[in-house]
Image (tube, rainbow, N blue to C red):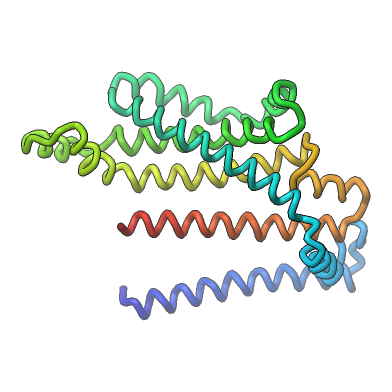
Length: 255
């Protein structure tokens, strides 16, 4: 497909996405302004926009944003380091892959968020419990993709490299890592996304600060317009971070 067609498809897809978003906002406005939907349950989008501008102008979101992003950064760094390291070590042995890959996949199917009360008991209501839950949940896609990336490299490449006298370092640098890198990047992107979602979710359940805690606090105070403004703000932040990580993934895969 030519670059012109690619560009045209991207423009068309963006137009559909923007049109869908505009349609949702329009239905939201009509429902609250003319169709009798209670503004206590669903505030008018104009009021939400007013609250959002006030939140951004006042900068009151900054402490909560700092807490949430700090928790995300620490949790993802720990899960990334441990997940890639453990995944690589397991992938070096077919026996270890057969033993641990099904076990880790089975553990991944367990909803780790159920252990949040236990984490709160161990680490308290502060940042520690959110970092622990974010690390636990994001660890699994990272380690599984690392095992898949390194463990299932085509044997032909390995045999050819060995026949040419490649050392262990050269084998890792020029054969294993290039073959596994795209799969590992996918795991890192998934891990980053689930870490962000789990941290935000845990902040709404048991926390003293953070964006999730702020949203729950506003809901309890029945300040629904400001609550929806914060929800919109969080959605934008999450979409921006996910887009940035996806762009980095695509850029790294092209190299």
